[in-house]
Image (cartoon, rainbow, N blue to C red; front, side, top):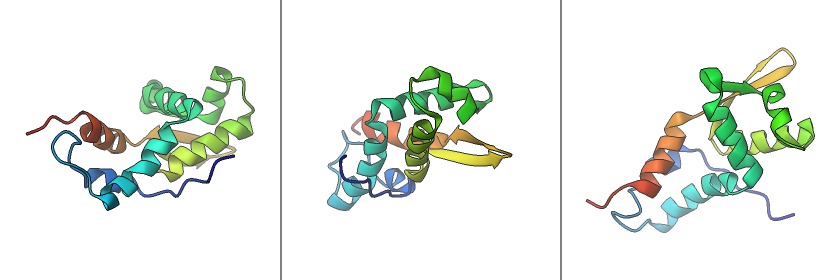
Length: 118
């Protein structure tokens, strides 16, 4: 398996100007890379999409299992990576964990990647 991700809080993405406006500094780029790495896996990208678009804006692991041919522990592992990267919030309710997309994190990444040059 590849090297483990060094996770940085999502606020690092908020500090960066849009890519088309000015070059990122090395520390800015290092702060954003863990977020992009967390999303670079096809399973995690799909999980992020499923959670963000789920009715009510949150999803339980039990709501996500049927979308994949993976075990529940594997799905939980991918959700943990997204959570530790700062892309998902989570709340334990009984035996289940519910996840909610951190919309500010997604907006910050969208602004970074899609921002127009001034």
